[in-house]
Structure formats: C-alpha cells, structure tokens
Length: 344
Image 1 (cartoon, one colour):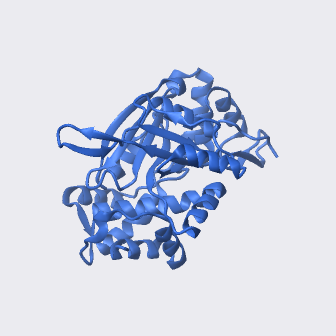
Image 2 (spheres, helix red, strand yellow):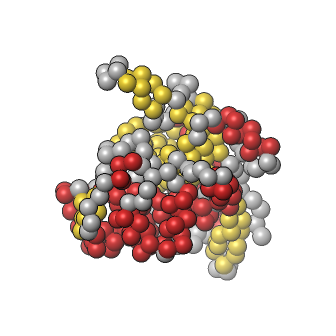
Image 3 (cartoon, helix red, strand yellow):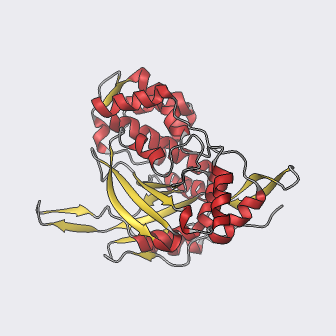
C-alpha cells in the first residue's frame, strides 16, 4: 500500500527509482491507508521525512544497505523502529539553536511528542525520545541525545567552540513559518509540504565547517561522541529495524561475518533488547595545522536492531508494545562509533 501524498513528496525529493526502493524496504504504517488529495497531514509529512532519512542512512552505511537488500530479496521489509541523532547544548553554536532545540522545532509540528528521558551519565549526555502522537507504535521514533561540554575540560570546551561556531541554521524564516502553520493546523497544502520537506530533511546533517584535525584529536581524547559530531554533525547516527528475535538475528549475522556488536544489550525491564553493526568507516576532510586539507578515515553511521516485548496495560486491559528505551542499552549502543581509524 502506498499513500499517494507520501509517494509524490518522495518522488519530488528523491526521484522515482529511490522512492520505489524505499517503499519496497519499509513497512508502511496502517494509518496511511486514508488520505485526501492536495492536503498533507503532519503524519504524512513526518513519514516522508523518516523515509528520506532512512534512505540517506543507507547511503552512509554499506552494511545496513546489504542487510536491507537481503531482507527485500527474501520478500520481507524493515520495521523502522527509531532513528537517532546527536546534538550539543552549547551557547557558541553559530546560528544553529543549541542542543535538541534545533530539532524539537521540527519534530513537534510534525506530531512528535516527548516520550522519555534517559540520563547518559557515563557519556556526560542525556537522551530524549520523541514518539509520534498519531501512531506511536508504527511511525519511527526519534532518540535525540544532547552532549554537555561544560562537564569536560576547558581545553575540550574551546575545541567544541572552534568546531561549532561556524554552524549555519538550515531552517529559513519561511520554513519556520510553515512549521508554525503545520503545528497550528495539523496539515499543509501539498505544494507547501513539498517546499518544506527538503529543508527539514537537510537539517539532519553537518551544519559547521570542516573541523581542524587538532580540535578533533583533542575532542577524541575525552569524548568519542563529540568527535563524531565534529565530522558528522546532526546526521542520523543510526536507524533501527524492529525484529522478532534480536538474539537469533545477531547469531545469524555473526555467522555471515558481519561486524556485529559482541553482546546484545538487555534493558532493566527485560523487555527491550538491542544490538548493532559497528559503525561503517567513512572518509572525512580536516584542516591540518598548516591550513592544508587532509583526508582521514573515521567512524560514520551504523545500523541497529531491536526487539520489543509486549506488556499488559491494566488501564485498557490490552497488550501493548513496550516503546520505551533504556539508558544502559543506549550507552552500550553508542560504543559502536567509538573506535576511530588511522589517518591516511
């Protein structure tokens, strides 16, 4: 089943071939079986954005691409559970709003509401989750983490400033006004939604200039997460497939020689289980001390897997999927981007 509004939006953004491919990859939420021509709801625009971000993640994660292609070849599809991004709450952030504020101004108008808060104390960060209010169990959630430079050394803080102070704001005044209209009305005319989609998708990227290698090295000594942000910015850190048995999947992927996390993470509730591939290696540019531009291999994005057990809701008398996360699980998964490679 294809929702015509989502399909038209994606064809305009990605082209026909990529649109057909991403529709074949992902399970489409049942909420989109109903639509109106020329009016795009907040849920439809949110789903179009999520699908475009998923497709972009596969461009940066060859392992994720191979896995997804295998699923499709077998006649299956990916249940897109959640995507993750990293932010920094720091006043010297150029024109970009600090921390998660740069993204809540997008997520809330699209219908995503705060659904959880997870202290990541070992990383000196916090994670917050946003679930879609119209279909929380079907539309992919967002796990938005926020790093706090004030919890690190003064030298580290200066390097954060050096990296982030050139940040540009990807949202134009026009885009901000359209998001306000979307939050007020819950929908937009199709042509307006088509205008807005590439802008909000473009927000999930690196907004600052090429970092200095010396800054990167200093950041890396204290926080692999901040070093990752220096090269990747606010790009999708990972996308996640919700599977029936993550333990069996992990064993099968290891048997294929895939770069899997050694152990599956288990939540304290014993209802949420997660594992992942190690981050794919990407080449990124840096500015050397003499001003030259050099290339270095660093960790990029990765692909994750999650199994969610159901819990009995005594209020409704029904079983429901446990959509929560776990701070311990998250900190374990974050390690997938912690090992840099040598300079070229």
